[in-house]
Image (cartoon, rainbow, N blue to C red; front, side, top):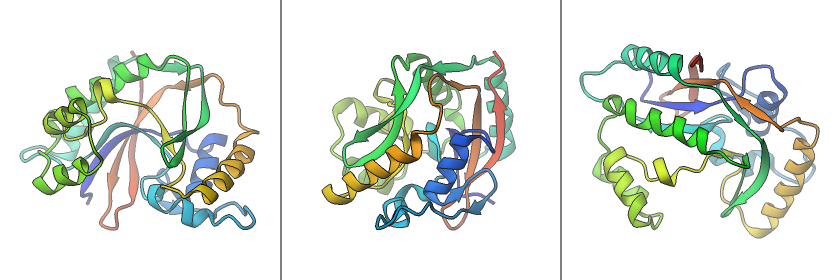
Length: 226
């Protein structure tokens, strides 16, 4: 049914942050439904969110991957359930809007090392379920001018921004020019101001699958019960 799988942090369905993210991006991975964008006047929200929309509102823990030969989606689900049963919840000091290059995202406030440790465990412990990256996938990633550590991770783990290169973020736009960037930043600041983002507990991880059209859907949410 799904072409790729991923492990993300996604806010729980029905919470203010989840409602904001689904509406802003226009896709709710938990329900598998499109959502109306907020009216931001002359800002074309659909255009500035076109790139991240298909993933849904999330923070990457284990990046999307194809299943390795001989493994199954059920086996992956069972392994993730086992991992989460012994992994501890993480409490971030908060989330804040930030500029990351030419796009906007929510990023952690303060020390996020515990979340990095959790992500590293998912990347490493579940790697047997990941099919090796193809030559085309490697070439596409290397177009981003990776540093030596990132290139080494790409070859070993199929993705450059893991382990010591991991930086948790929840993407809110695609790459923007200067004028739409400033406009989107102001619009997002207004949308986020009513939300209580400090502190921000992460108590679950979500397994998602990518459909034939490239959109990600929630398969199951697992409690961090360690």
